[in-house]
Image (cartoon, rainbow, N blue to C red):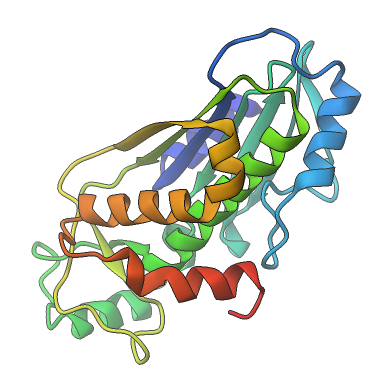
Length: 244
């Protein structure tokens, strides 16, 4: 089941997230029951889909002798994902770029008209929504900071984020009446890979700043060279305060 689901996810644009201590220790979490409790107690609940999500039917199950997992396979709702938490405190999460599941042909043509382009050679049919991307980075870093507070981590924590199938993918705002890009910013390569090491205490206190920095770095990989963190501070603040 796991490999079939991961293969399905990788056919789309996808995220791969790995959060782990800077120093490996086989059993940082004493039991699988504690792994399950750690997830449930520290899920990020800022919008209708928790991070990480626990499937209502499958729940959290044992995926090996040292790890627990859960998955969702709901393409109609824009959600296909699989995550695992190991007793070493390594958390691994795959999920689809939701725009690939949610954007229909009508919206594709609307985006192309916004950029005054209709030639699919110049602008393809794959996109990355800026605000949703910011929200996802914020959820990832907030979850990492919560886990780091609860587990006896090493002095450093590593967060690795990969965006797959990004070549030819273009940035956009879903609500183009409210926000506008001056041109089509498109990634020319794949995958986008970013691995960051942080002092654990710094991550706990500065997850907002770090997640915003990584979001801006990602947008620049799409050739939006003057992307500015200051533009999105209020968006992130409203999201965290559930005012979005």
